[in-house]
Image (cartoon, rainbow, N blue to C red; front, side, top):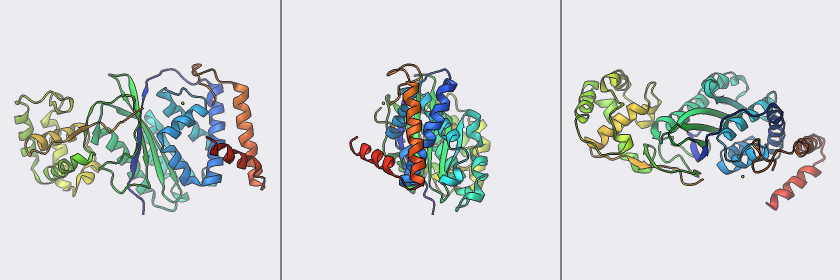
Length: 361
């Protein structure tokens, strides 16, 4: 059975602008393809998902491909290079990539659906995992980062991983979120296992363990309280002098505009918080309003703990830590291509050398 999912890390990166030069992106696609082929050939497609879900491995992967070690663009560019590099090899490797940056991210469900004939599971379960991972990081965890990138990696048997990124226009940082589908059975309680970040602050954290009671109350309020009563409670709260905490402000929440969403939740009667979060229209403002009611009316405070804890080859496109050496880059692609080709005919000498090299790392 497909597991619900686990966020395995968060990484904060400074926003960088500009495009990757075509000569570099083409090489990134080639090298990403060869590394993926070697990894899947040696360890299987599920292991590739595990490595992608590790924020440290992914950061190192970006460095090997020649991208800026500390740039927000490492996420979108590496995922794009991996998707392009694997094009045409999906059936052979049993590994698929959907989504991407901006508008491309919204094509994820369709791209998953289009691979249905190659999968051993119903694609609807993968579409649900894709959608819920995004809703958790954009709505249930309100840390100030608006998602703009979502890449979904999956295998024929239904294993999956997510790499998505959000932008904070105030502090000029981007935050990357990693998910791995094999480890956890609950989307909405402590989904993170390893977190990397350069900045940390307060967040409305509805997926924290400390928010368990809040999640229960929110689900009950949405399912059992008539929308008019919820709107009335919010209107009364707007007249109070509330604590000076970022999330608890009602300034940008308009109760009357949320009335239809509350009605939709009331009619669907969600059994729990995950069911509520999965409903269409349930977003950050709705959850913030319900968490405020939970805290101030039902005395169940929500967690403000930011789950982030801390926040790398071939050089980088902007010359840091040093300029990309095209000759060495091309030789790396050539070496890996030869290793893969020889492995296919039984000559595993170079792959064994790579394994021995890894043992010294």
